Image (cartoon, rainbow, N blue to C red; front, side, top):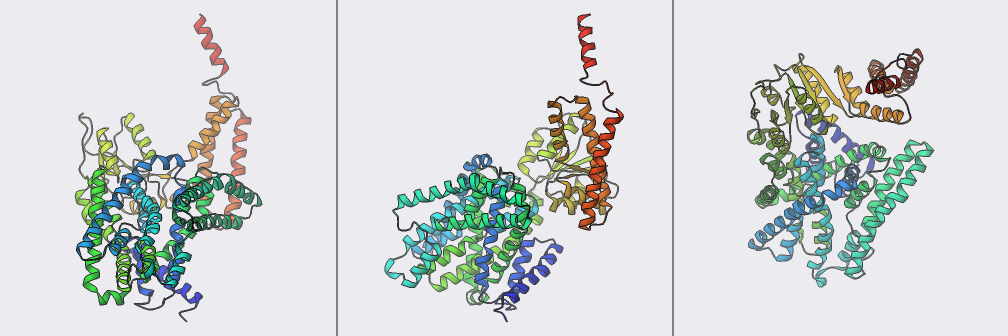
Length: 632
């Protein structure tokens, strides 16, 4: 029964459906839920998944590839180029320091230099899947810690290519069995293995250029043709085709599929299909990543763990401690604040998924023996499993004690001790709100989870708290019980929606004003009963349309009034739609009906002369009157 694909699918899906909600209910991350599910259904606990777990791991690794493609879509090429110093600086420093320290420690322990170098390369890598998934879940990608983590992880994904090229040089040719050689060539080789090193480098560079050219001149035109067919599943198939094809191309030339997918995402970040690709691939990415985490959990060999408990425990603790020290040093070199360094230290202290590839490759080449391979695979899987637990301990027990909790008053004395307005999040959206309030004489207590940004705000004179605003104790210390208004400018709906539910339940007296990234987020917030919802794209898009009308010769005052009417009617329409059943057909019918009514109302306003008869702003009559007064 265990060999059945359908049975394995049922077990994996059931494990995820049961364990992940329990983990979230307990305040844990979804990653930990998936890992625990994998441990339970794996061959060493309940035994639902047996040896085929290795095949599942190879398939599930595609989730990491897809995740990097979607991350690439969020980074425009010019921004990626601006990050190059951080990527090489922080990433290079972390990898080199970790390798050097681990190599010399292993040599001192009596390990031969080939094995020591191989293991040190594996230890230097962190888990891209776990780290980035955690950053996404907690909305930390736009923080200093998020940018630093991403830079280090990206450098690691690039350096894997070099590591895979170096490992065969560590093996003695006469010790490599013919079977291992054929397997190795098939699994890790490239089309250009027989070429000289210089030509191999040129071929790899050419393949990267080819990806850029394909993205601009082949993929985008292809997507335009597919879009014209108006068949949604065809666009989904095209999206998957892009990721699979580019990953395959990267494998052929000996590059990391994940790196190739990331590069393709960056190339397509400026295309008109950016958001369509994101929405299409997001469900696949989430499902495959969940499968990957379960495969990691299932791969923990409890037989080996019971045979060498002290050795494996020592290796595990030593590896995590070594990586933590290196990451803390790197954070200090690059002037990160204490809390950001702690987040970086704990967030990347585990060994990553690419270690499975490196260690297995080294075993095929007879560099590692069976005992060494088994122990290092267990250490890798265990480090990935306990990484979310260490993150929770850091977040709940350590950071609240070292984070910046006290407020800093402005040097002038008109600022009150407590404010009636609390502003959560001071990114590009929140900073505009906060600066406008301050310029208008209204002080707000600002909460933000990026300590570097907190320091900048204090220098600018803002009263500010550092920390996670979803924590009740932080809200209480910020004076939420006396506050009248709370402004939430968090851009992650996965954080904002639960935050809204908590505020409605615990602080019913508070007037809530929430940012929504789009119409769908606004719809969900309105359904919770929050009346003051602000779509960040609404005013900007209407202003753009208004500028178009002005440039076409329409009067500014007329356009302004019409813009305000459009926004008013659109808000009214959205509120009406929240009262309707969620049946898709009825929803679409109501939307079409409301849009038609909205256009009729705007047209009627113009016909009645409410706007055209106004003598305001830039009317010709006022201009003529002004000229007469000047000449008088």
